[in-house]
Length: 403
Image (cartoon, rainbow, N blue to C red; front, side, top):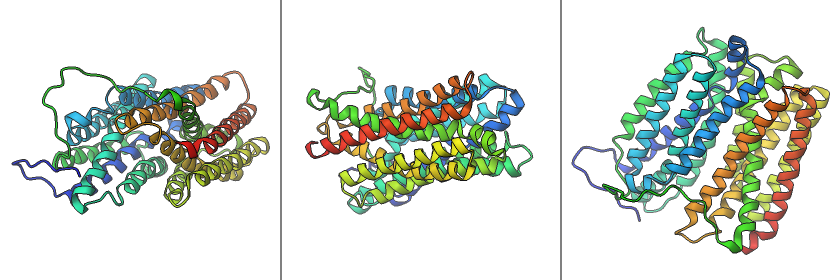
């Protein structure tokens, strides 16, 4: 059982601190996707192509990967509280950079810094929620569920909030970041009052970045889990970056709220699937994920061919459920591949492959759109995603009984 470290200054109770961490987690993940429905406004103002949008989005994923690789594990020895406060402040810096509104370099920098914050946040928040809950009630209980809802739920809320500002605010590229800046500063102050749940190390003499390690005899299972996570996050990466351009081309949809609502529906479906999947055995989760991705991306491809906005949104929501099932299956498989001393490193590898999926396919799509029409590019993306997710799911279903 985790032990809350006693300090002289007045701190929140573990029960109150649990919900402060959960709310801050939700807020910071929402900030990560607020720009999604605003990219079209940036494009109109700056005059850059869709490829540039994918690069701006990719800067976020690269920031996450860098932070996961070099700082995701540091909360084990500097403390959860310190890391969470740092993540909130780093994301506040990102909001300030957005407020500068200085063109493409500014957007790239803001998204990269936002990714750094999320990379620092996720592991510390997830572990901190579990430890605070254990101290409060004697068992982890709802901590994993709350962490899932805060993570994916925040990603879902961000585009909806951005769409509302884009639709109704006179300053759509300024107001949301100013509001979030205030929220992030408030979160940092509240997080500084939560009790610490791990014994901190005053000085670490030998820093080692987060390794990706897996037992040799289980590398095939690890690669399958990574492939499933890659395919799942490729879908979320598309809806977080390229989907506004698709909606504009096939349906003439330029309304920020409509764009934000679409991303909200897809990410929300992934969050809902995570909650439902806990009731299913591992093989059922894998098969449900594969079937949902196959059905959703088939509908998505059909939407591209017949230029149907309704089918595009419907296919995205169905695929979103598949994303939730597949990603949970990948994490469960990864967690079972190593002993307790190496489990974090194996999971780090799964997360890194997931964020590679969020980065590379959208960039490749944007690059292809410089020379090729949008419809065939998106059909190829749908087919590739279906093939990878189906192959990964089939492999995971075979090995799940052995891990």
